[in-house]
Length: 276
DNA sequence: AGGTTGACCTGGACGC
DNA sequence: TGCGTCCAGGTCAACC
Image 1 (cartoon, chains in turn yellow, brown, red):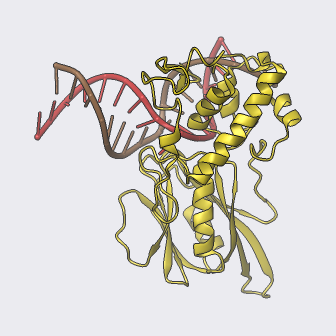
Image 2 (tube, protein in one colour):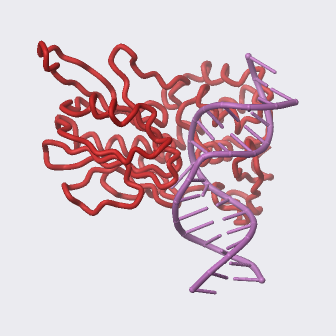
Image 3 (cartoon, chains in turn blue, brown, purple):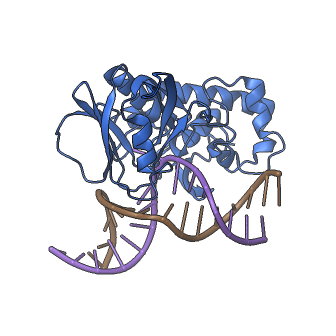
């Protein structure tokens, strides 16, 4: 499911619901391979911890935790990390709300609410890191990267530009929808070798990636099948998609049918007139 | 080392 | 109704 705008929407809707609350207890389905830290370790770290804040790194939800140790009341910091994979949902509910199929974590808060992690396909992951370990997703945040940094990511690369945009070690947060939408806006074909883009094309792509992501965040993300934010609300950006999911439909600019091909094993949508 | 492919999962849509 | 096929927002290990 969720690419940067969807994760950002989850984080924003989650933060004001749970910041300042303490996690009292938690339940885990234990189903592999969702738990990168064992449920026992996650429970040990999050139970009794106060949520200091919630933020995003690429497609990762990062929940900042703080607790006092039992022994000498020293402050311990840790982070609870969640990646939603393809179909993950991270929602806040009231206590004892109906438990949806494929629920894998329920964290009970002292506010009386619950945080729930639901994921039918189980491509999502969750784990905890201590303050010493820290968490760093790697890659550049697409909304912060400068043009020169952006251009240098693709220099000398022989892989299709679409594959490079999806590579989280380069840019963190762009996924299949926003890669296609960005390339359309920039007028660049997805199969072009990343290293072959001119400076002008890279300029347009840098602008396009940031614009598409900002517009999608403003619309609350794209809801294709099951995406919802932490309040259970769907996003609206899917109605503004210009090529993604529109194979065979007329290009919004020139009217030619939108093409669908496969690049890097992913369905890829573009206009053969408008993209060179 | 960089690039490519298939495996990991469930479920919805579609054709017969 | 049911069965088979294909497709889906993402990674990651294993290959070339």
